[in-house]
Length: 251
Image 1 (cartoon, rainbow, N blue to C red):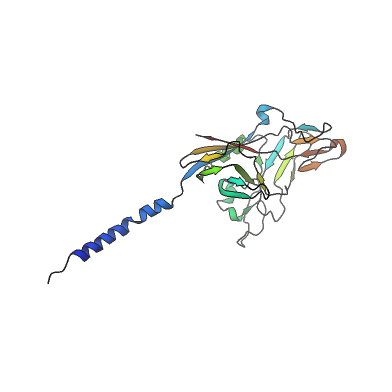
Image 2 (cartoon, rainbow, N blue to C red; image 1 turned 90 degrees about the vertical axis):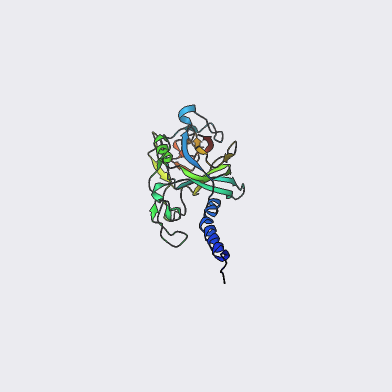
C-alpha cells in the first residue's frame, strides 16, 4: 500500500509559513516616528524690550542677569484641557535630563518615593542657564528623540515630579539682587498654544524651539509682583517666569 505524499508536503508548507509569519507582524507593530530636537531661545537678546502691561508705571522692568531652571523632561502634547490644565490626547517626550538615565519614574529634583514604592534615586541638581541658552542647546541637540506621528499644539515642561524634600527649581538674579533660588508651586509649565499646530509625520526631522522674553521678567517698585520677590517698598524686586512660545521647523 502506497503512502500519500500529501501529509508531508502539508507539514513542510506549515513549517514554511510559521518561519516567515513573525516578520509582517513585527513590522505592523512598529510605531512610525519622527526625530525631534528641543531648543530654547531668549528673544530679548535679539529684539529688545517687550514690557509687561500688567504693572503700573511705578514699577520699573528689566531683564535678569541670571535665569536658570531645573528641567527633568519636556513633552509635546496634542491638547490641554482649559479647565484642569491636564494633557488631552497624545503626549510625546522630546527631552529627558541625562541624570534620569532613561528612567523618568525614579527621577526628581529631590529624594523621595516613586509611584512604584522604590526610591527616587536619580536627582537633578543642576540648573539650566537660560539667560544665554547656547550651551544648553548644545546639550539638547545631542538628544534627538523619537516622537509618534500626530498633531501637537503645546509643549509641557516638567520642573519636578513630587519634590518631596522641597528643593528649589528656579533661580534668578540681577546686578543689584544676588542670585537666589525658589521653589515654584507647580511642577509643570505649559507653553503658549502653537499658532499653527505641529503636524509630525513618520521620518520627519523637527527642531522644536521654545522662545521666551526676559526683558521684563524683573520688576522693581512698590507695585512689583511675581513668582518670587525680595525687598520692600521702592526697592521691592520680583521675578516673573516668562511665557514659553513654541515654534517648529522641519529639516
